[in-house]
Image (cartoon, rainbow, N blue to C red):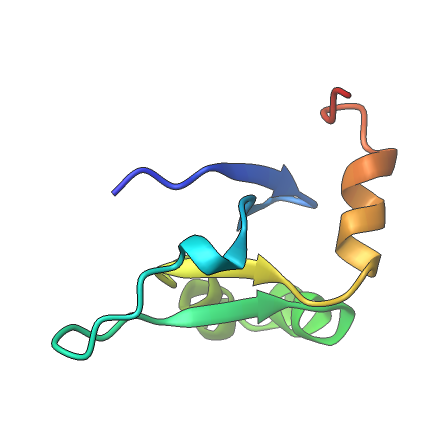
Length: 77
């Protein structure tokens, strides 16, 4: 399945309406979030970082990473 995403501080983050995430009773999916705390932990712990990166959906948790995206030179309005 194609997922619209953006790169934020080296992580590929889901970049669409959360309502588009399909929840199916017959098939599970993993949804993780990136926050300042989880980002710091991921930088120190490769297993935790792998768990985040391998999620089916990896979404922003709060405004900090959204702000980082807006301030990055990779973001184009």
